Length: 116
Length: 114
Image (tube, rainbow over all chains, first blue to last red; front, top):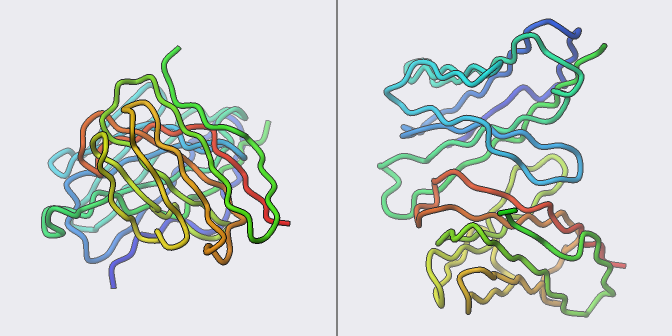
């Protein structure tokens, strides 16, 4: 079956360290993958999009990698701060094989807590 | 400020009542979406609209209805036929009509059925 998985356990790290979150998928050939941040009781906010032909994308302290062979995306936050504490969602495009009804498939998210 | 607004933030409903959730955007986006978010489950698509006066069912449309009379507005009605309506509802929009485009979310409405 097709599915997308993120670390189910919350990630706790010390301020200043690098946080690494994982998004694994099976049985998709996505054209691209997106990462969003969601704070409690609020809507997700788009962070980064990486395409299938891109290995890495950066935005300030954020870095995303995309390995279509491993079927995995890694999301890194360097020099983490307590303000980075939130849930991070990955969403992938089902891909061209899904046809005209292709849609975003959402992961459950990983909760990140950055401790001062 | 451009963005998406949802109202109300919290909504309480008695069983058997219909209730309408508001969603407005001033981003000039063509596409709009309604999602439901429950603990332990990912975002699930209820309905989406790629153009005014047209909309399609998502994965869990039963018990819900929508309209798209204006580009800016996409209200969702939760009907009494929805068996488990208590959830966090999110409205989103995207620039173009592809359902896989980057989506911009509103702040959400938390619906509780009493």
